[in-house]
Image (cartoon, helix red, strand yellow):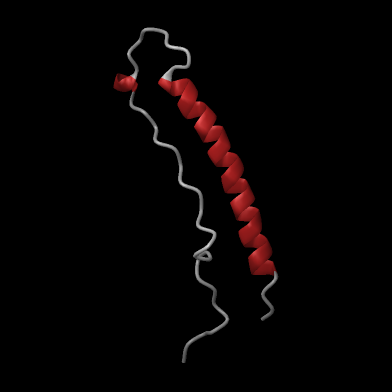
Length: 68
């Protein structure tokens, strides 16, 4: 017997955000670029964390709205 109250890990129309690509230390040219690839990565990481928190809140609300 299957449990029909189980939801998939996340809805197909709301997948979790993808983390940004983390550059390796060797990928920096060391010329003091502005912005440096690590500056760009850090900005993308902050955005990802914000999106991840928003996504997790939506999933928690979704799980909380399911009546057992």
